[in-house]
Length: 357
Image (cartoon, rainbow, N blue to C red; front, top):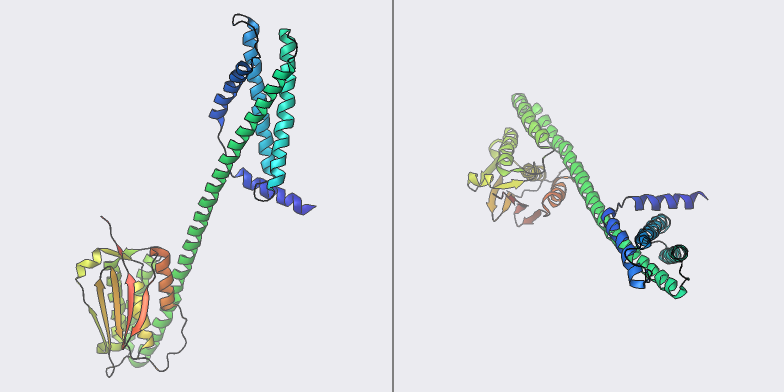
C-alpha cells in the first residue's frame, strides 16, 4: 500500500513545480461568459432593462460562470495531482470529461431553475438544455487551454532542468579534471626533484623554489575556465625553467610566433605545460639525443611540436595527461585537441578561443 501513495506524492510534487498565473484571464473570462451566454440563449426573455430583475440576472449568471469556472479549475488541479498524460492518459481523459459534465451540467440546471422561479417564467427545458450544452462545451475548451498551457510550461521547465543538469554535470566533470592535474604534475615534478637531489643538490634547491612559483600559478588559475594565452605562456616559461635545471642544453624550446598574438586568444589554464609534460615524460632527453620543442600559432590553433626519441622504460603512467586535456577542451570550448605522431615528430594542436572586442 505504501508504493501507490509514494507514486501519488511524486506526481503531485512534479505537478506543483508548474505554477500558473491565470488571474487576468479569469477576471475577463468569468464576466464575459456570465453576460454573453444568457443574451445569446434568450434567458432574459421579454424582461426590460429598466426592471431590477434584469440586472439581478447578470449578477446571478456571472455568479454561475464563477462557480463553474472555479469549480472546474479546482477539479482540473486535483486531477493533475492524480494522473498525468504520460502515465495514465486514458484515465485522465475520462476523469476530466466526467468532472466537467457531471459538475457543470447539474450546477447550470439548478441555477436556471432558480432563475425561472424568480422571474415567474415556466421552465423552458429546451433553453436549459442549450445553455447546459454551451457551458459544458466552453468548459471543455477552457480545460483544453489550461492543459495546453500546463504542458508547454512543463516542457519548458523540463528543458530548463535538463540544461541546468547538463551544466552542473559539465562543471563537476571540469572540476574533477582540474583536480586531476595537480597529482599528475606533482608526480612528475617529484621525480625530477628526486633526480636532482641525487646528482645536483644546489639545483634541487633552485628547482624547489621555482616549483613553488609554478604551483602557485596552478592554485590561482584552478577556478578559471579560460586564461589569456600570454599568461599561460609566461607560466609555461617558468615551467620550462624547471626542465632546464634538469636537462640543461639537452632541451631546446623555441616560440615561433609574434609574442603580441598571445594577447588575442584565450586558452584553458595549464594546457601548454601538460603538452610539454607529455613530451618530456615519454621521450629520451640527453645531450646525445636532445629534444626540440617548437611552439607555433596558426589560424587559431596553437601547435606544440616535439621531436620523438621514445624512452625504452617509461615506467608507470597515470594516463591522465593528453586525455585529461582533451576532455577539458571539449567541456570548455566544445572542441577537442588533436595529438598524433607525424614521422619523427609528435604534434599537439590546441584550439584557441579568440577574444572578441
